[in-house]
Amino acid sequence: MTETSKVIHVRNVGQEISEADLLQLLQPFGEVTKIVMLRAKNQSLLQMCDVPSAISAMQYYTNVQPSVRGRNVYMQFSSHQELTTVDQGSQGRKDQDSEPNRVLLVTIHHMLYPITVDVLHQVFSPHGFVEKIVTFQKSAGFQALIQYQSRSAAVMARNTLHGRNIYDGCCQLDIQYSNLSELQVNYNNERSRDFTNPSLPSEQRGRSAQSGYGEGSGIYALHTGGSRAVAFAQMSNAAAIAAAFDGGLPAGISGTNDRCTVIVSNLNTDKIDEDKLFNLFSMYGNIVRIKFLHNKPDHALIEMEDGFQAELAVHFLKGAFLFGKKLEVNFSKHSNITPAPDAHEYGGSNLNRFNRNAAKNYRHCCAPTRMLHISTLPQEITEDDLVSHLGEHGTIINTKIFEVNGKKQALVMFENEEQATGALVCEHASEIDGYTIRISFSQLQSI
Image (cartoon, rainbow, N blue to C red; front, top):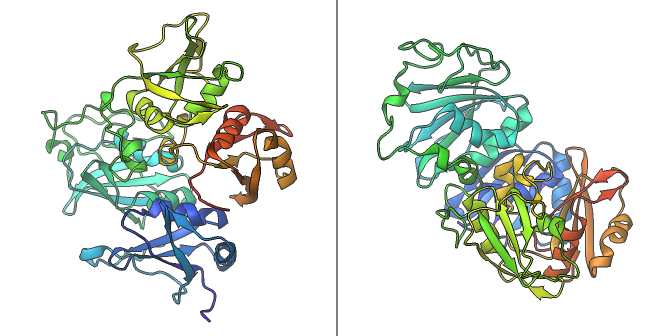
């Protein structure tokens, strides 16, 4: 029998399965500090923070078949006690043996579009508070040093983003741990930023950004304007979207829609209201306002923050069942909802899910499932408490309470998707013992 190890060997890892998918399987049991994708063998190695975390994961998945994107994967303890290299496919490159710390060294490959501090901040901030960023040009290409407030945030960012593209087909992230423990930032501008000290001056014209790190100041000379430059104002979510979807987009999503307002019809007028629609549609983006149509009471307009979020909502919710009705969801001919007394405002709501961790929320977008993920639960919560709180919405097949970073979370499986959707729209943002719980659909197939 293979002895226990903090390294877990995963087999049958298809090409469609990403690092983030595998992390989702194991992070409920502890921090994943390293990951190796052996693409040629359809295998992966994941190193947990310690042996007890790995044992907990293996004990759980001994009784539950792990499945990712509809494919069964198989786990066992690895013969490795520690991962010291990272497989880089055909490059065969060894990992820099720097120990994990809070400063990351990022190299951008295939850089067809300009990358600024603001773009990097959009990509990396969903994983934790970014204190400082410095960018520079070296012989390896365009590089950046990114300092997080905590080591765990840097580990999470590297595990999630390494090898991904910022934009579709280009600007690939090569992320290693830096040997530096603290960055010195002298100026706040498009090449360097200290987010803890906004009063720093911008550099004088013609002077290099951070001479201690780079070899010059001509970073932006590659692409300054021109037809290939990215219109950042029109792509406010581009970095988070790219981080979430591995540089591409989910099947069926074009990413080109600019209509922010959707219309949903065939609603059950006896059971639905604005807040319940908010709870459902906020799974796919931030909600600006919602309005029911006076002449068609089973119709409602929902204005979302941008066209991409609206496209996600239409794609994933069209044909979903709620309260005995099959929803019809389409883009509206109205570009927005005019503020009015009968239009409910949600733009400033702290319940909008995409105000924080946008990349993580995009990654979890899916059609309604019968499995719900519940977070911000009381520490003393029991499975009986969950059943009592949610059971009126349908038949609960199974529940599981677990802990992530010291905070209680749960999975609740209903008999079908409609029951789970009803529970989500009615109970998201409800309270249990003074805790405002958060509910979302989970893509896990079983508990």
